[in-house]
Image (cartoon, rainbow, N blue to C red; front, side, top):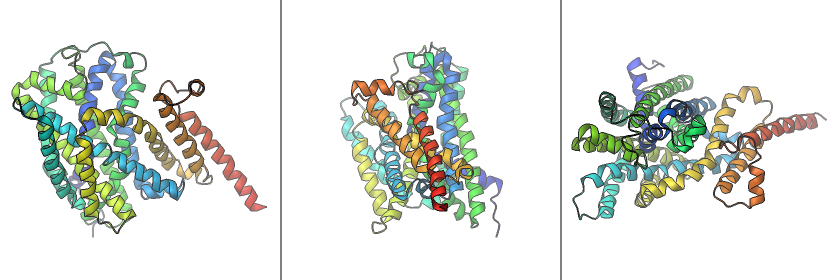
Length: 440
């Protein structure tokens, strides 16, 4: 039995992983970044690509090489692994990302086509019911995602995005605007932090499991071969994300002066599509959004269902999937703006720990002699990021706020980095002390 996929199947695995990543946020954030960054779009996109492409690819590789997310997180502590992974799944699942797939796709496929007088909330409710029922039924077969997503839906999505990009280049709506205030001073940093909102680094820590499942479905049984094919799929997906993000960001970049009133990426794309294709533009954009959001919704339901079923096997995988779909349905009808507003502080709190786990996975051989690095670094990283978010939300006393502002890189949004390094150094010293004590 061969333990190697042929090139066509390798590419198909990469396309499948791309389809899992590429959902609501992946569509709306790059064009808005391009429009807002304007003449500073190149450095802003470089920062965005690092957090929205580089980190997710490294996340897939890190988790795969570590033998799974639970194994990696358990190096901190088994209880930490359970709590953090559960929080991560809830964030990329029913609490934020899954509802966003339905609300974002509806914003493109619903309101532009509703006759005057039709109650939009009722239509949205009906849409989300159909959306989540269909996604749940497909998610019942996670080992078949390559067939459903990679072969059938994603090629249509890619063709439509390429057509939108080509039309924008041939017939630009305007020209780049001066950078908005956020991008005028530190465009790469702002782009990097903006990339958090795609949630792809968080998703990457989980999607590797589904890709490995689909690799095994192709007859690959040897674990080293499964790991190799999963990592290869991660690189293919990364290249695809980078190209598509660049297309979407460039489309927004060209619209800067044409649509100055656009408040988010959804409006940028909608106005650009209508400028390029007239009424047909709304239809093209609706199809793009529905396919992309449906693909990601299916993947996230599958991931969350499998994880919580493994933790609580008395509740079936099927029940978890439909349960998460029901919760997501309720939250999706709260509205896209509400979801996005809530997501920023939550992501800023849990993202640094995901980045830390990825970095530690690649440094594992070097720090294996110092196991205490994991818990100490995680403690300081988690505390630093959570306290920073509380301070940013105005929930800390003014004296504490002044102390935070003294931390290097705090103003740039990386106030957790120095505390994390300090925690890692304590972990090294702690490990050395424990070794000396055990020898006595």
